[in-house]
Each structure stands twice: as structure tokens, then as C-alpha cells.
Length: 311
Image (cartoon, rainbow, N blue to C red; front, side, top):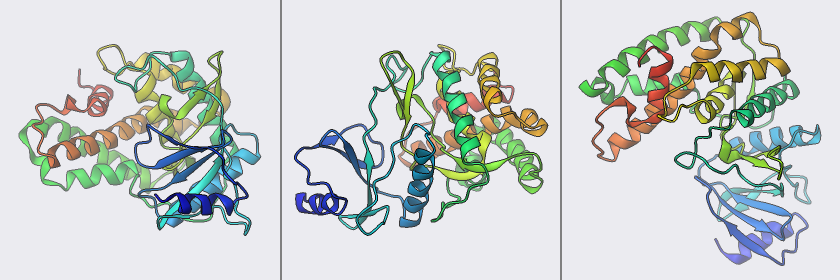
């Protein structure tokens, strides 16, 4: 990234930066803290249409008081520009600190914060109900599509994954019926990664911001409980705790009342989310030449197996 490219991008948004500090920790994108007041981001893999969708959604939410950084429009009114021929955006800075004490740097035992995250997801879904946004999100992150892709791959036939494949096949059949008849399941904006690393907290431990909407999509809104459950309802041995999952569902339901069908399928949709994450992780491991000894080599797949009866 050339300094002149970043400088030009910022000036197009009315910012003559004095201090630009690279931010570390991003999994996919590059980000910089600008004058302690803004965050600039260069997207490494999102398409322009996907960036447009994300920024339209985050601007909509921020304008309605939802705690997420607002994108800063350029002087020509555009929400995004380019840096090094990649889409880029500028956001207002959100104060706060990430949760600490995470198991493996990711999982949290703080169920109170998990309930707060579930309530925040419900608030997001209420605000964005019946909204459509310019741009387009591909279906590549849809859990059913990711499971189907795995089941068509040669990895599904590996003996070590035989039981996981059997359960994934049953899940695929059930979800296919749900997608064919989605009556009672509300669709809309899904953040798709509400985890501890994407929350900022104040000194009292209250949520100040939900960040990083770059994986957001339009799908069944209850999929947002999937990442929340994976983050906050694991026992110390990393197995799923169904009692804690039910507490998260209750916290969500207190803010956005579930339909009867959503209540019936909530755990299934959480399991589907974990399955999609699990097959992605196992596929990446196998492609890299790793020796997979068990489906539980992926904590997400272990979570899925727990929710479908494997102990």
C-alpha cells in the first residue's frame, strides 16, 4: 500500500491525516487508525458489490442508533473508493476494548456477555426488518451451500469423517426442506460473525460497538445465533452446552419474539451454522495436507456433532 494512495483516499473524504497507524489482528482485510478518529479499511477479497451492500447496511444501522461505526461518504457521495485497486472504506472510530480472557483467543465463558450479544443481534434484526440494500451479497457464505459443497467433495468419503458425513447428509435434507418451505422463518440482514473479537466493550463490560460486517448476508436471521452460540456456550472441554444455548435463545426472544417455527428450528439453525464452519475448517486442513484424525479436529464440527446427538 503506497502512502500516496492512502493519502489520496483519505483526502477524498475530507481527512488530511496527521497520524496513520496500521491495526493488527484483522483476519482478511488491512486497516489503519487515522488521527484516532477514523478507521480506513482495504478489502482483500470482498467484491465491490459486496462492499456496497455492507456499507449501505452499516450506514442504515448507525443512522438509527445501532452501535456500529458509520461509513464516511466521499465528497462525491460514494460510500467506498479504492486503494491499490481494491475496494476501500473509511469508518468513524468506535471506542472500547475487545473482551479478554478468551479460550484459544476466541471462545468466552462470560455468558452474561453472550446474552447481551444475543439481545444485540435481535436489535439489529428488528431495525433491519424488511430492508433491502444496494449492492449484492453472494450466497457463498450460506450454511446450506457450504455443507452441500463439502458433501460433493471427495473429503466427505474419508473413513475418518464417515459419521460426520452421515449427520451432515441428514442436516442437508432437513435444511433443503426448510429452504423450500421457509414459512415462519424471517429473512433479512445477518451480521454472520457476532463473536467476542467483533465486540467492543466499555470499562463496565457493556457493549459499545459491533464491528466488522464484511461477512454480512441476507438469510435466515437466526443464523446470527450460530456464531454467538459457538463463542459463548462451550464447556471447558469445548463441547456444546445445550442449557446455555437455550439461555441465549431466551435472551434473543426477549427482544425479538420468535415465531413458533423459529422456536422449533433455532437449535437446528445453530447446528447448521456450526456445521458450515466445521466443514470449511476441515476442508482447509485437508487441502493443506494436514492429517485429520477426527471430525473433532475442528471445534466447530465437534459443536455440530454435540447438537445432533454425538457425545
